[in-house]
Image 1 (cartoon, rainbow, N blue to C red):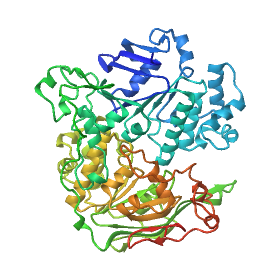
Image 2 (cartoon, helix red, strand yellow):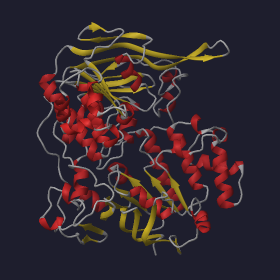
Image 3 (spheres, one colour):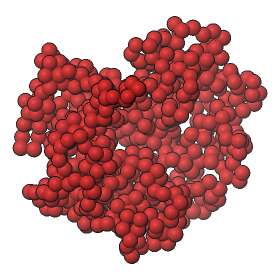
Image 4 (tube, helix red, strand yellow):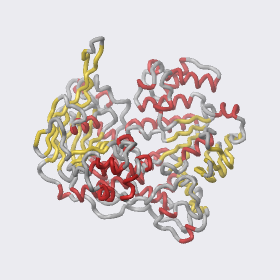
Length: 634
């Protein structure tokens, strides 16, 4: 008998049904993944089985059987012992889930008292050690703000394990983490699952994470499951048109310089009344019957079922489409942007007189070249200085030293309109009190508002709306339109797709490629998403602790990495399909306020030798375009 059995679960909010007739099982020791875009009902399903729904929501029908209990019928007092005890939950954002005024150890001790009746500092330390936190006794006395994102997520996992749960719900547990820390957390979760024979409900929109972690997969769309399959069968031949289009939207080397296939439109809003298939309006294969009748479940193999009117499974996934969008002939021998030995050091002030007692070496001697019509990707973990480089180039952060040239002219003071920035969070960078037309003309009055909106794939009538009336992908398009209003030659894009679903990400990447081909734009693309780099960029610079450790063309760096840190980044990327494996990197990056002597990467590098601890390696030229700062690169 399955450990968890959900049958026809439905959740209502007023007249809307964000979860509508969901059924699946999870066996002990098994990982079941819920996959789909934001707004499909994945997290609401998890909250419903935990009975943690918002006040306006309620379970309208269905049952949730866990072990021998029907959770929907349990009184609230009994549910309190289930939550955190029998069923643990890891939330997407650990920073907002941990109490900021309690130490991490105190919060874990609280969970122990609640679910086991006893608490002890030794047990708290054991739990922190079990999730791979170094020096757990000291870390237990720290507050959440003193920990990195990866450390906070590990502390959340330790708290979830305090009640020794039989089922762990992991809701997007690695979305905000770098690929190296993500790999550590995923390895940790999978190891704990195997060790404890614990079941896991994994909620994610990342196909790579699902491919690495899941035993079985359920694809959700508009509140319903549309496909359920074992992992191998699903990744060999996904059956539902929605699932196949999620695969087609993934950027990779094979789709470089081609339009990614996107899913038109967006997930239907809550309250939409459906007559037939919920995906019909966005499906390129829809038949008349799809809009008239609810599709039946079709079972194609043992455990592989699809809710669709179309007969038969396809033999392969939907491939990339479109024609080449980036014209390599746009590149020139002369660099558009030249950055030489850029440094940004922040003073650490202490004492009554606030004298500088040291410096945070956020950027420590970075040199870059970006050519017209080409994309240079700047990659690395959070805190390595990528965003500070972008801000210093634009004059939003005053450099400590170094030079920035545009078309060979030295920049100082006000930066020309030829350089603009697209920020990671479009909602935070758009004034919520202004209409879109006012936001676009804010930098420079222009009569081209309608033209700019159309250029980024939005309609002219949207100019009268406010930012809160748009989706995340639409807001990012508006931010790009605002940047284009002053006719720039260079866009600095700071993680512009990191918070987007794969389908919306594909739309933004297509837009950037088309604008580059049409306008000859150059991009400095700041990201930690290696797949996006492979699709969009021509050159790559890898940054670690304020310095560039490897640079070269996309093929040289991503398929011939010579620096151990670059190899570790590539090894940490969850892969939908097979690929080369390099080494794994342990631990978090050191503090830029106190970088290690010698090579900054040596404390985390399995190849480090005595000379690595004594001197920082000079760049080794591996070709005319490829160089790496490593003693063993040659």
